[in-house]
Image (tube, one colour):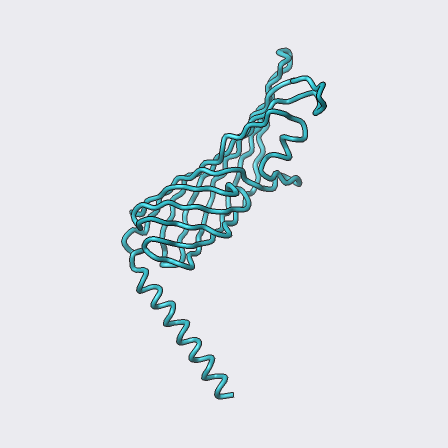
Length: 207
């Protein structure tokens, strides 16, 4: 029993020492706790009502051709609380466009155009598990409110354009993010699930 307690005690001391060593070696985070970054990425996946819209493609493929995607773009501010945790706010915008046809068959006739936008705004937090001046590895979580807008116009001028707005709660998960460069100016790449782009890259500054 004593041996087990001794092993547990030694393990706890080593863990604390490792955390303290990490914090000591990561003093660079104190030099600029505020972070501002911009990003661009490709396709989000999120729940809209009871239907999942993943990477936009299924929604467009059901009734459209000539699908065009314009990207997902983000702006983010964060504050470094300590060496392993930061929190802040973010905004993202995404757009696609497709032609509407009377059917998906070869004889389908173009009847209009649909433009779709998603805008989300909310809180974000990131957990850094490797923090060095030139490289950081992290995961994250976003809790946002989203606005989905669809605007459809038609070839038949007697038919009025239609705009639909829908609000929805948006969740984002970042399984893995990598930041690299100097601590002051850096680049980053992320993989995401949810309201954020599935894969995105960006630039940021600490100040």
